[in-house]
Structures are given as C-alpha cells and as structure tokens.
Amino acid sequence: MTFWQRLEQPAQALVYGATGGLGLALCEQLLARDDVARVWACARHAETHEALAALARRHGPRLCRLDLDPLAATDVAARLAAETPRLDLLLCASGLLQGERARAEKSLAQVDQAGLLESYLANAVLPLLLIRQLTPLLKGQHPCQIAALSARVGSIGDNHLGGWYGYRMAKAALNQGLRCASIELARLNPQSCVLALHPGTTDTALSRPFQARVPVDKLFTPAYAAERLLEVLAARTPAETGSFWDWQGHPVVW
Image 1 (cartoon, rainbow, N blue to C red):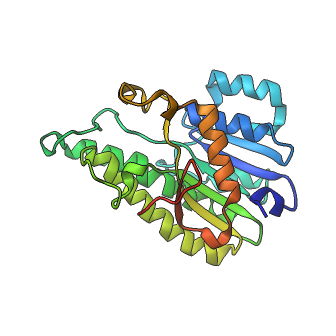
Image 2: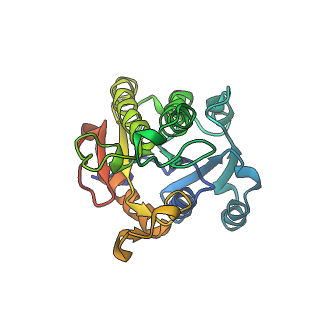
Image 3: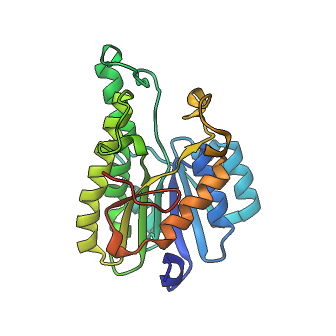
C-alpha cells in the first residue's frame, strides 16, 4: 500500500525550497493530485516569487506561499496550526553547492573554514531545524512522510573520487541527522517515515556549472526528477524510516 493509499483524507503538504527548480516542480506535481488538499510553498522569499504567484493564480487557496527561514528564530508550527492540525508530507528541497564562500573544492588546498560552515548550515542544519520546528504537526497517528534532498556524494561508502569536501561532509551530516530524527519521530508518530533522497543530476542552478561532463540521458529536468522522487517516496513505508534512496528507487549505501 502506497503512502497515498494509506491517507484517510487529502494530504496537507509543505515544500521548503519552493522557489528552486526542483522545489517548484514538486509543488506543481503535488497540486495536480486530487489527494492533496493544500501545499504550503515555503522559501525565504516565497511570497514575492513570480513562478509561485502564477501557480497560486491557477490553484487558488490550495497553494499557500509562506516566507520562511528555518535558520532564523520562528514558530512556524504555530503559524500553520491555525490552518491545519497536521502535516502529512514535508519535503525539504533546498541545498547549496556554491555560495558566498562555499565552493566545490578539488583539493585540501581549497578548503576554507567559512566555506565549510556555509555549506554545513545550508545543507545539514537547515533541514533539521525545519523538521524540529514542524514536529508538533508531524506527531500523532497519521501517515506522515518526511524527506530531504541529500546527494550520492554524501555517501561515505560510495566515495571513490574525493573532492567537494564541504558539500560531501554536509550531506553526510544531513544523512545522520535524518537517521536520528527518524528514530525520535517513530516514537512520536508510528506512521512516520523519514527519508534521505538523491534526485540525480537535475538541471537547476545548483548543478549548472558542473553539467559539461554529464551524459544527456543523466541530466534530468526538474519535472522528471520531481516525478521520480514522489514515486520513490510514495513507495516507502514506516518500516523503512531512516533510509537513503536514489531517484530510481534503489537504496544508497551510507
């Protein structure tokens, strides 16, 4: 039985990173489903984002845009609780490979403390703070799927090339954080399932500087990556909470 089949009523879903290519595609595909009651599209600047505004015009009150920064002190659960008593689906689709100081380092000589910290905050700390802040709406007895975008390069067992120190380290930390959260949330909601998901190389701003050597058939559109991730997520059960999966539905070694 899939996640959608286990639901007793249409889902309340929240997508963080909704202004990015993959996050926007996830919002679009969730809104296309009759078994989704509402999508909360969240990002630091979600309320003024043009593509989200266009999506809101098509779907009316089923799409709620919300400016949210999980790294800032906030009580987002209280804000949502006025509208919904629960969340059935929480997706964190944000990530950072290169930023103000973060870089895709090729050697130890390029490793920089500020870059490592920037990557760690964006890729590991932010998703865990988001889950922590929304825990009041996740606990209970309802079917509940929680997923964050990880990356195969965060796998220690699969690392044969090295490099990309900050990004690899941050995604490995995210994986451990999700594993810990899965254990705690299983006690708070036995029907919860926490997942790390690898979307493959998707044609977004994050991967664009590194696409030259990616085979055409391995560079996915955001729509395709979103479709595959939702299929993988829907197939997972509470017995598989705390696990790591790729876009093909194959488990990824830690």
